[in-house]
Amino acid sequence: MATLKLENVNKIYPNGVQAVYDFNLEVKDKEFIVFVGPSGCGKSTTLRMIAGLEDITYGNLYIDGKLVNDVLPKDRDIEMVFQNYALFPHLDVYENLAFSLKIHKNKIPVLGKDGQPVLVVDRERIRSLKSEIKMLQEELGLEEAKEAELSKLIQKKKAEIVELKHHPSSPKTRQKKMSKLEIDERVRNVAQILGLTPYLKSRPAELSGGQRQRVALGRAIVRNAKVFLMDEPLSNLDAKLRIQMRSEIIRLHRELGATTIYVTHDQTEAMTMADRIVIMKDGRVQQIGTPEEVFSNPANVFVASFVGSPAMNLFSVKCQEGKLHFPGGASLSLSPVQAGKLRAYDGKNIIFGIRPEDMVIQKENGRSYREALSLILEQKELLGHDVLLYGKVSDAPTIIKAKAFLCRDLTDCISFYCDEEKMYFFDETTKERIL
Ligand SMILES: Nc1ncnc2c1ncn2[C@@H]1O[C@H](COP(=O)(O)OP(=O)(O)OP(=O)(O)O)[C@@H](O)[C@H]1O
Ligand SMILES: [Mg+2]
Image 1 (cartoon, rainbow, N blue to C red):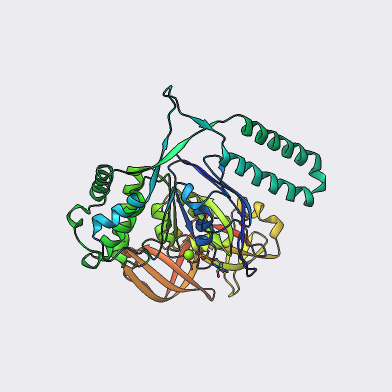
Image 2 (image 1 turned 90 degrees about the vertical axis):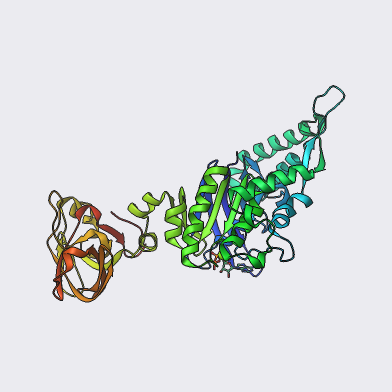
């Protein structure tokens, strides 16, 4: 069982670059979370702060409700798979998998004469309380208004430290190496799960890219960590292998049930793998939600254009007297409900968004469409049953996704309708969703 909580987590690198701003997220036990966003948006930095490989400049990180800002990476019970994994070239698959088990020691509770665990002072909790007090004291210096409340909290934590120092409450442990038999059992089990049993005696150089990738994953899962962090683990595989490994990772996650955070800049990967997606841009979280939520209810223009392939069509239009006016002269009537909700924007420019698959070139019964717009067709791309039509609507580049059988005899000027239920509107200045 492992939950994670990031509370106003910020990262400022020593050179002054702020890579992450006020990151807030609660990860449930066994959840598969994907961080996605363009290069440089702070995904790896956030992951490395969770692993303890980077300091948190300010903000709090909790694992299972315990503040871990100052807990060493090795004590966090987290395993991380890096983008550029390195296997030991001179060791075979078995040895590569067994390596971390051999060097890692397990904590075993020490029992007293009465057979009960021996208790000692909980130094870890005291350390964590001390750093909480330090943060509260810093806050105290900044926020005079909250002085009474903060001082009370500090006193409470100080009292807890005194209590902890006088009442041993943490089980005493000793470090024990795993036995050869235990290691063998674990290695063979992981090899079985990952389909590596036939390759246990092979060296990395004798394996395919996908098999090597599985060994790298195996080295992380062999230790049964509570949390897995994966930083673009599939980026150096070709497209076909990547798709195959994606489903293997999902299967593994189902089998192991470890809380996982997975980083990628590929929105398709995020959409297919995640329970919930965290979309980031320039160090800030843009939206957190299930793949369905971020697709159907994008919070802003960035999310709308980042999620979905091909991307949502976006048009800068003027909203006037119940109509959208395109720069090239075309116009589209709004429904009375839409016009009502957009009244505050009358006379102003807004961004109108519609996905390629929600623009229909033939009306379907029972659905509500506004009047037709025209696409000046420039290019077609056949994708099996579907076809992508590239062109311009009122001078703005546009893509329509249609059924191929409806597009056999197309002219250069195609009339299409927008599904009223699928129209999106964004504020031109703030880029936030209006409707
Ligand atoms: N050690 C460092 N010192 C200073 N700035 C850094 C350091 N590491 C990263 N940065 C900066 O922090 C920002 C976020 O970097 P980060 O590596 O977290 O991005 P990312 O989202 O993982 O990108 P990518 O998809 O390219 O891996 C970038 O602007 C980067 O230049
Ligand atoms: Mg990165």
